[in-house]
Image 1 (cartoon, one colour):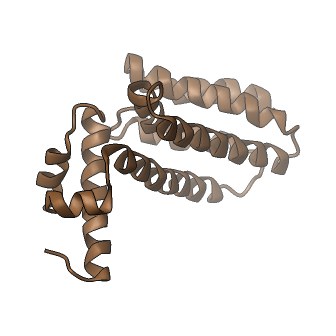
Image 2 (image 1 turned 90 degrees about the vertical axis):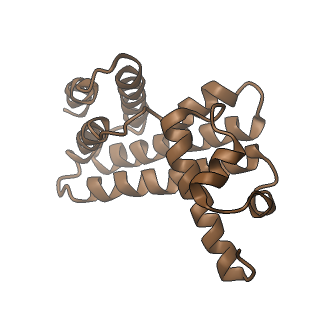
Length: 186
């Protein structure tokens, strides 16, 4: 059982890794703290020391996923040399994401749908993620010499593709949104 600061970080990482797998695959409400304990190998006592309640764990999961998700997207977009093509690279990345075997849609929309009406903290994490994604797209638009609000239009296309792919199983939704985005970008 962890007893020092390094062990606490290890336990936290194991808990967050387990939460990420379980919450994304099964949803937040169907996963209990006992499930997290079993999947992480961290005692329930230590789990509650790290995360006093499930809401704290869910928000930590969303914050961590935000860093991971945006880093993956930014790394992909950075491989594109032409600034006018970078906004379209977002949709290319999304297409790959949609085709991952464990794809279950947007973690923030999923959590908001489950808990947003009852958890201010979860709702705030979802808003923060969406605002960050929007800011990223606006910056890409400006770097491409386009009006900043083009980024807002790209956000609507991207979010629509994410929801469509998750709800309908249309794995080509990103490609369809990319075609519309190409008309905006020119």
